[in-house]
Image 1 (cartoon, rainbow, N blue to C red):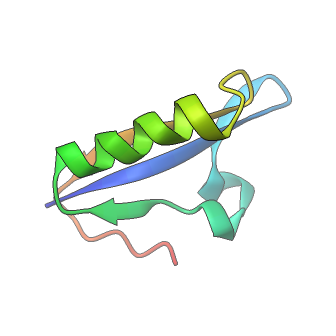
Image 2: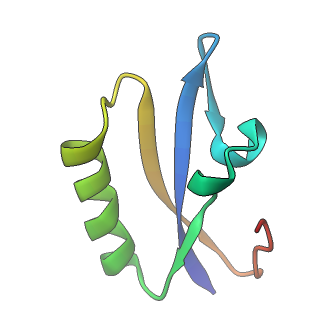
Length: 68
């Protein structure tokens, strides 16, 4: 069970994940707990990028994700 930071981009009026857009440098990143994921999410969304075009979300999964 892990928390993943998932990055979304606004593309042609639709929010799409980095995986959907094959933007490998932004593929989801695993974190051991919700708190550490949320800290990175907050930094990402408030300091790094314009939230009108790039967003991040912490999402929980029980399965191991093998996107990289």
